[in-house]
Amino acid sequence: MTFEKTYIVQKDNQLIIKLPERFKSRRKVKVIVEDVDENREEKINALKQASEDPQFLSDIFEISADFEHADFE
Image (cartoon, rainbow, N blue to C red; front, side):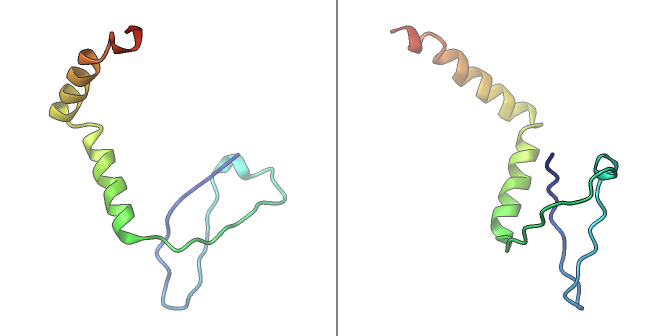
């Protein structure tokens, strides 16, 4: 079972992580602390927004349709 969330480091340099309910029966978990590239996070958020954008989805569908038969050639 995996849970991933980005946190803001507080001034006291501590984190309190509230785990989802599905971890309630677990006695042991692994915590990995990774420095987050803020530009990467902005890009990920932009991609999430694009995945709901009607024009973007229309473009993706059109490109997909253009190459639909390319695999058979």
